[in-house]
Length: 200
Image (cartoon, rainbow, N blue to C red; front, side, top):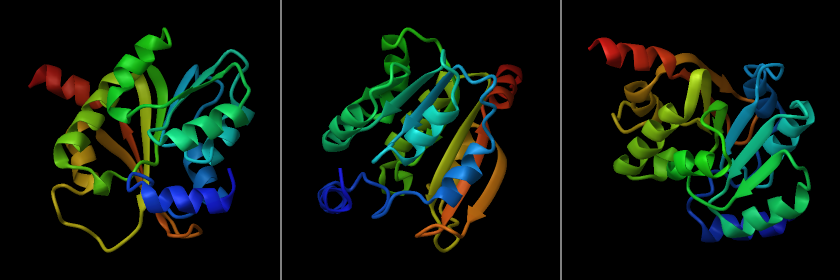
């Protein structure tokens, strides 16, 4: 799928996060937090044209699994045609169904989940469902990476920074300026949140 097709889908589908794919700078900044030696299951929310997908598959072990969850049917079909790799499982579905999707792939949890979906455009209830199910989907030492457009600082309690902190512990927060538009990047851990809930 070329740039023109991408732009047409962007115009039709408000759930597409960006008018352009993520830059190599943004991809590399996020991927440096992944230990590919240990990663057995990686999940990607909103792979779009597969910029991350391609990089992930290039570094993953031969026995690892990548589950790419893409809600846009046009992108999902293009991804399935592009990545003829037994490790890649392209699923045309919503990220909120990640637990069912993992079960359908015969795995219990993910070591890493990477999200490029536009949380700012989602209703609060959907944000909470995705984040809660994501926390449950992560392995004990799993990590969740979220990248979003960088804009004016938001104090709204519905902003992804605050919603993410409600469900997990944010362990890293960065801005990648060498991207159009610039990205806010968050890395979150589920284990501490689970331990805190158990003692509360």
